[in-house]
Image (cartoon, rainbow, N blue to C red):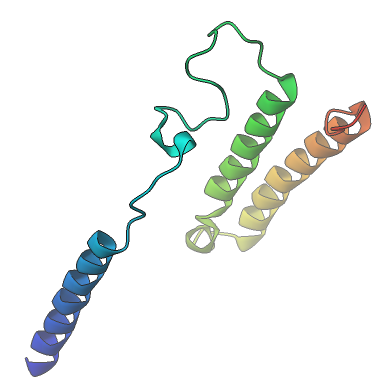
Length: 116
């Protein structure tokens, strides 16, 4: 019982200390970019009809694709409880092979080239 009280006390004290430090350390003189309503790299007061770069969307889609890969491969340790571990390995390998082939295709097509 004493261990639970000690852990709870330490956790509560650490939380209070971190909250107090976060209120004491903020920057008091923010710059103009931080005061603007959007921090996306575009002028928020300019025209809303500016074209976006297609390379920006390519990077965003690639990020989502590989983020999805992590989400699909994350439950693999629990998948080992299946009837045959070979099937788990096979499906995980298929996901990785398909994603790798897609990345190679993008690379060959020149979609990952930033300089023209």
